[in-house]
Every structure is written in C-alpha cells, then in structure tokens.
Image 1 (tube, rainbow, N blue to C red):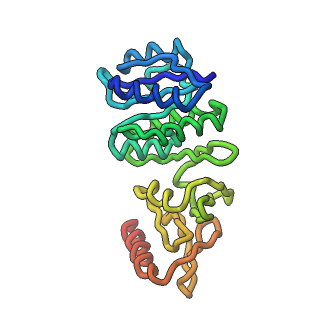
Image 2 (cartoon, helix red, strand yellow):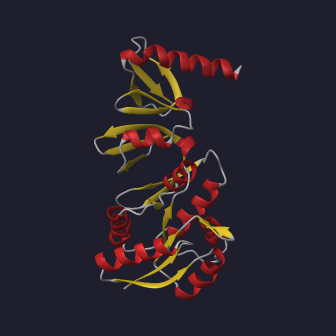
Image 3 (cartoon, helix red, strand yellow):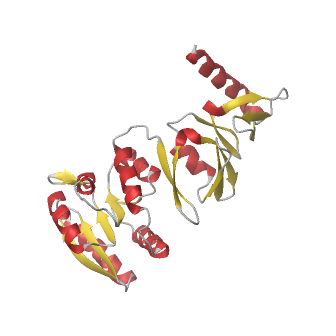
Length: 251
C-alpha cells in the first residue's frame, strides 16, 4: 500500500484530492493531512509517506519551507498550486510533478500513476534538493532529465545541442556523450528560453556558447563537440546577427 499525506490550507482542496484518490486507486491510503507548514513538518516524519501532495502558499510558511524543514525527504512530491509561472518552471527544471488549481482529475491521476510506474523513491531527494536550489535561483544552472532508465542531473552549460526525434529528443554534451529524453524539442525550447539557446532549424536547438564555426555555404553550424546542426535559409541572417552581437558583447 502507498501512504499519502496531503498538505493544504484549503479544506476543499484536501477533500477533492481524497475523493479522487479513493475513486481511482485501491492501493493508496490517506495517512494524514495538514493545513499549515508547521503541521506538515511534524506530521510527515511520523507517517513516513510515499507521496506528499504539497501546496505552496500556506499560513506560517510555504511548501518549500516544509521541504527545507524536514531532515529526510525520501518521498515523492506532487505540488498542488495556483502559484506563478516562475515556480512552475522550477518544477520542470527539477522533474517535479505539479497540478494547478482548480484540480483537474485527469492531471492528478496521471501524476500519481507516473509514481506507480516508477515503483521506487530512487533519487527523489536529489530532485527535491535541486528544486530548492532552483527556486532560489532566477536562472538555474542545472536540470533534471528523466530517461527510460534513470534521472540524470546535468549542467545546462554542458549541453551543446538538442536534436528532435519525434516526441523524444537527443541531447549532445561537450564530452561527446548523448542522452535520449522523452521531451519534444518545443518543450526544451520553452524550458531553456532564459539561457543562450537558439533554434536554427526545426530539428535542432543549439547552445550559442558552443558554436565553433559555420560552413561557407551557410547551411551547417559546427559545434564545439564536432556535431553539426542545420541552419534554415530563412533564419540565416537572424542567426548571424545574434552571433555578431555576442562577439561584440564579449569585447
């Protein structure tokens, strides 16, 4: 059986989560609820839950304060929040699930089912630690990436380029290693918009800091790891202007 704790200052939200879980999961029990950060910090170590549904804005502290206040964080977290876009981006960087209020039944069921499929708390504390770092940093330098076999924590500056592979993407790194991730290129483009990444072609997203040269025909970009990215004709002038601006800025 999976044990669940629900932390939210809105009783209606707690009751909604309870009802959805009871209707859709026979192997999950609600082991406790809390209405504030201080209550949650006392309750969670006693219950030792597998999953914590965690609100952000609560009396006397935030959901992040709850996580900071716990000595052991070996449980999966699903944030249930009406919080701003910045926090949501921090969740995505850290591979942490979240559900927006008002609560959508399908979204909640999907988030819980994902935890069911993983059937392990492997690296969940690493994900939470990364999240806590990311919410303090307006421009996170590390990202958590879920693959079919693991969760990888990588430095964004080490990513040379990302290639589209349908609903998947292949990341190429400075050390010439690769990683296949179940995110499409559009998701990465949005996620990395605060970093110097550019999409010169529908199939490529490149780190501008790792551009080595452009071939004389102007349709191929050679990256620092030796890999090649295509440059579409309609984006050629824009790309050259961006690169010229970066070079000028360094002077």
